[in-house]
Image 1 (cartoon, one colour):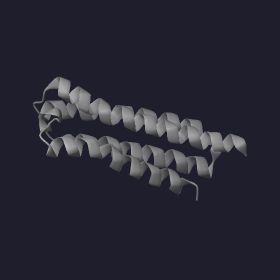
Image 2: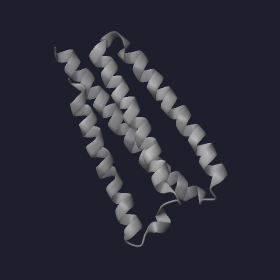
Image 3: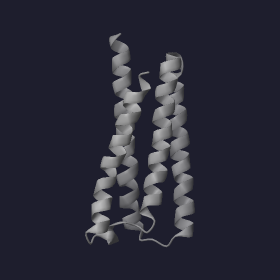
Length: 128
């Protein structure tokens, strides 16, 4: 099935994305990360994994629903992230600038990878 290369590529990407915060945390730059940073990291990464997997599987089953699946997963992902931000900030007292930097580090890089994988899959579809 064609979905496996995209899913494995995403898992490798997440591991590479985790290297910088891990190194920062263990080499004296822990103040650059919000408390409970890994909760934010794994929540957004998990949402992106579910979105990428669902879209790739929908594309493999029925290409006619690809656009609807992409729009639905993107909408659900951004709404879930907004709810997560509100709940996280209500429960935790954090520096807002550090939180903003950490959140956008994880969210934007995940979004860039998601768009890259999905465009790559579309490009292969057009070649057939």
